[in-house]
Length: 168
Ligand code: RP5
Image (cartoon, rainbow, N blue to C red; front, side, top):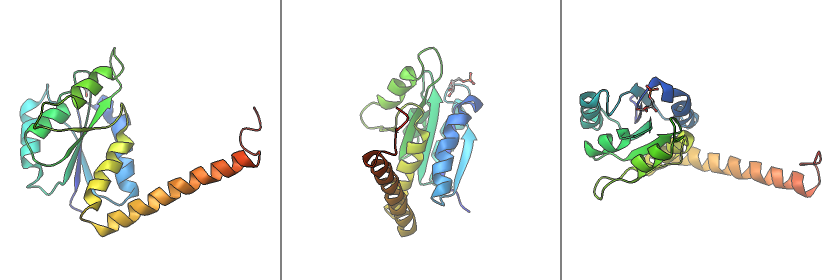
């Protein structure tokens, strides 16, 4: 199936985190592609990927990178598609550097930044964008939210009847 979401990461060392974005999309039946492209190590490829993304049928790009993370911003510079940024919790500053590099974009070039390592939320946010024009995805997202709420209600019921945390 034609990929609707492009998941891009700066290094293979980001894959463990970025797989969570793929998992969220898989769970909602949304086709995606995954690529390793670096804003610093393969800058021409980053520009070319982003410039051609809309023409290739992508609707949203998810970009994860660590340290001085410029990948999401560079991709956003070359496309009008929405870009969701995932700061990866790597390096000496454990992702705080990547968070600030990704979220603090100059006016005119937004990146919708999720939390450090929050690639699952990036996948869900991309799905919510797609759901604006796809009733099937919207229905599956609504079912996902209902299931999540039911799980919390079940935990609360356990707490109220004394069967949760009874080992404390
Ligand atoms: C960033 O530098 C990557 O996104 C990765 O998070 C970090 C380290 O990359 P490697 O040295 O593991 O390739 O560009």
